[in-house]
Image 1 (cartoon, rainbow, N blue to C red):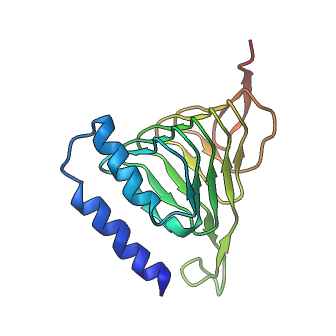
Image 2 (cartoon, helix red, strand yellow; image 1 turned 30 degrees about the vertical axis):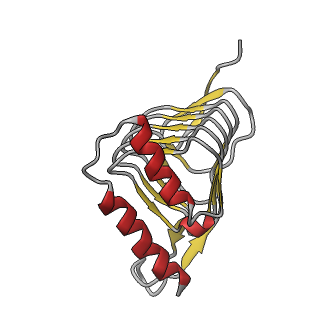
Length: 171
């Protein structure tokens, strides 16, 4: 029952401030309203007007996190976004996958796995992050990439479909 109430709450927050401009103070108010239902949330959480956040009860966000326009976050399997993360427009983060059952995916059971995005990372525009994926600290997921597995090398650029190590960003 709690999950259904939180779905209504997220709809309410999104509807209430949808037409408000994406200025830092208004985006902070959006983030604060979402944080009231979240498992854990740091300060200065900013959410753009057209971002969709679902399953707030399993979402953990650090300090100074920004989520841009048209980003969809489905955190029913558990999502941790550490401090200083930037998520660009058009991204999809899903902590669950469908399974094949009875010859199709429509009626298969949902498989949930947590997703981790490390501190100081940047998820560039139009990226997809799927269940069980891990983006290390101070890393970049290049535009239009799909992160499908766990990586552990900090300060790297990951790119492609599926994403692989591309470049060391260390100084």
